[in-house]
Image (cartoon, rainbow, N blue to C red; front, side, top):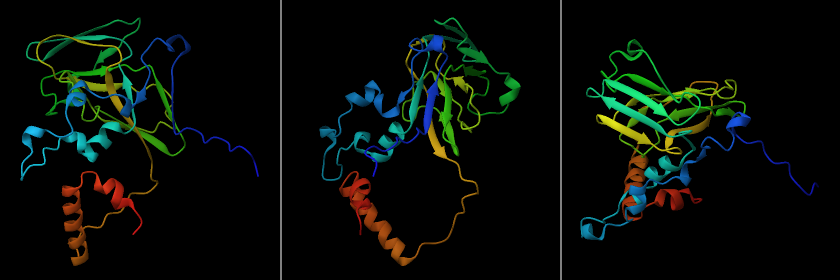
Amino acid sequence: MPLFRKAAAPVITFTCERKDHGVIAPPVPARSYTPDWFRRLPAIDEARVSPTDTGLTVKRCMPFLDAMHTGWLIPLAATVRLKISESGTRVDAGWEFDRPLVATHGMHQVRGNPIGRDRPPMKFLNYWTIRTAPGWSCLFLDPLNRPNGLFQIIAGIVDTDTYTAPVHFPFFATGPDGLHEIAKGSPMVQVIPFRRETTQIEAEIRSETEAEAEERLKVRRLTDSTPGWYRTDARAPR
C-alpha cells in the first residue's frame, strides 16, 4: 500500500504572463473577500428583536452566504477610473497600467437591452487565463451580493477546458455622473466552475403529494426556528 497518495489535479488554474506575475492583482477565493458593510452588520439586530421578529440579518442567512462565498473573485488588475457623464450615456476610462484595462462595445450589440438602455456597453480586459479540468466550464458573473454601485458585469459561460486564453468581461457603468476611482484589487467578476452535463437535465413539473407537503411544512418550520438548519441537521442521515 503506498505511503502517499498522488494529489488530485486542481479543477481550476489561473495563469498569467511571467511579466505580470506579482504585478497584477491575483484571483482570490470568494469567501476571502467580505465587503465592509457586511463586516459591520451584526448577526442579530437587537433593536428589532420582539415576539414576532427574531432580528436576524443576512449574516445568518446561509443561501446569501453560500452565494457570496462560492467560487473565486478576479479583481481589477490595477486601479481604474471611470468618468461617467451626460446622465450615464458617456463613459471615459483611464487606468494605472501599461496596457488597456477597459474597452468599448458597439451600442448595436445590445440595442433594446433594459439594463443599459442608453448606457454604452463596456468591457474589462482580463490578463488571467482560466483553465479547468476536462468537462468543466466557468460561469462568470457580477460578484454576488457585493453591489458596488458603479458597474454591473454581464454574465457569461465559457468552456474553459478548451478555451485557454484570457476571457474578457462586458459590463455597464451604472454609477452616477462624476469621476469614480476603483482601486486595484477590487472585485471585478465572480468565477464559479461547474461540471458540464453532456445531456439536457430533465425536470418533473407536477403538484406535490401529501408526503411532500408535510415535508415542506416541516422544513419551513425548522428553518424559521433554527437558522442554517438545512445545512446541518437536514443533511444528517435519516
